[in-house]
Image 1 (cartoon, rainbow, N blue to C red):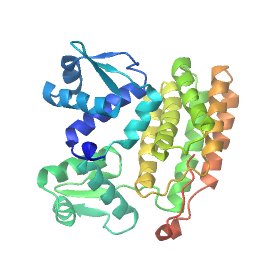
Image 2 (image 1 turned 90 degrees about the vertical axis):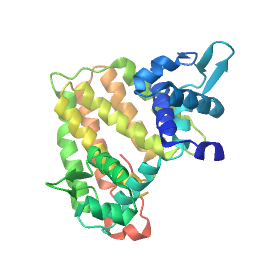
Image 3 (image 1 turned 45 degrees about the vertical axis):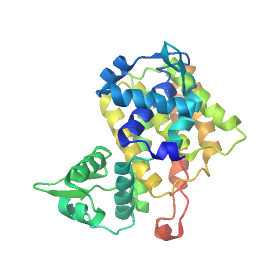
Length: 306
């Protein structure tokens, strides 16, 4: 939409964060949105917040009541759909292009900031932001001086298998660890979102599926009560996100994956941790076996998500 494309990166970023709060259930339909509170929460002035609220009203996510202000109108499912429809920020586009070039072997493993600036025609501030974002996602890391290097990622069959072998060791054991404490409220919300995808007659949004898959595995890791487990799974998700940048992810195993997630959640809700761990191990093994044909990247192979 033209209206969406005319928005600044900051407004798009704020809109995404606000919609995510709705999607996560922190803001329910009918919640009153106050400019001052949002500006303090997001660390920005009231002017971009006001513009963002008007923008989201135009998308149907909010409603404005005379002399009262803005209120949340959409539910979490609609909020997730709107997040997927938001235009990408300029930094995000550059970041994805760099990630794709690394995945395709078009750029050296070690590069300088100057090389990145020249190759992608970036200013110094933009290059710094993009490189910092790639580092945060675990795709790149800073070297001494002005150098940067790409980290190992899931761009070969060997590394892909090693990733899933690692997860088959970690995630089932996390479920069986003494400190594991299942959160029934968040678990029920996740289960409902999976069930809605299975029940939908419409073609599912791939971005939504990927985020839901990430949230499921990070939820399990967080329930372990072990911060290092949570960090490891979050890092694995970031590595898999590079597959999304390259458009290798496809919904081929969607139904089976969602059903397995639901089965795991149901056993956890019933306190059957050992059975849930067994299903998690089988679930990850199936994902490993459904690996893409890395030797045929140029032919747009499909990736079957776990």
